[in-house]
Image (cartoon, rainbow, N blue to C red; front, side, top):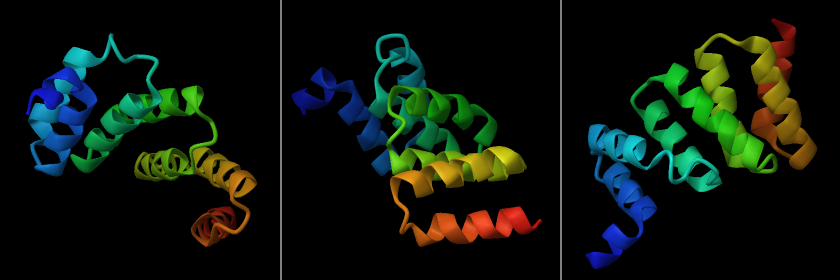
Length: 119
């Protein structure tokens, strides 16, 4: 149990796993300045906000995670979902194209890109 307190990101992940989203948000906000340049932390926080259907608050975290690591396909996938939720078609298209540069065989990104470009 001591490990959770020595490793705040583990505690954050545990809160998420346990469905304690408001506690995860509180903890994350308190840790934000300490982990502002941590890709995993930013990804986790973006995910928390996405889970609670707050795409507007999720986006800055996914943007920062992308800034810290622009090769993370999982982050790009969730960032695409956020842009879709916010009805930002061009940004979602850009994310799909970035995913396909990293993973040309990604059928989900291919299909979504085709669908978005046909609208």
